[in-house]
Image 1 (tube, rainbow, N blue to C red):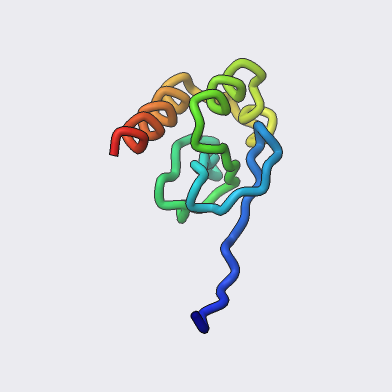
Image 2 (cartoon, rainbow, N blue to C red):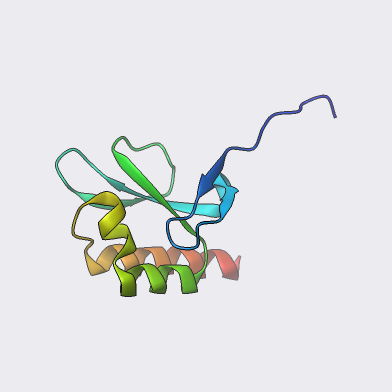
Length: 92
């Protein structure tokens, strides 16, 4: 293989691991302060990455890690959506 492209790594705000961007979920806070899940990874705003594991999501919820990272209140629906995305992927 001649393509020696670097895999973009991102740090999980929960585990502190550096993982390929593709194996993580991005949560984004817009300028308006809206917090949402960013499955494409392309939304503008301040982003935080979380490992695609239910444990990481639950830990982030329990310890308010995303709130600290994004300096915004994280609605429960965001955590529910993250868990839904992880579960859907683990079925596929």
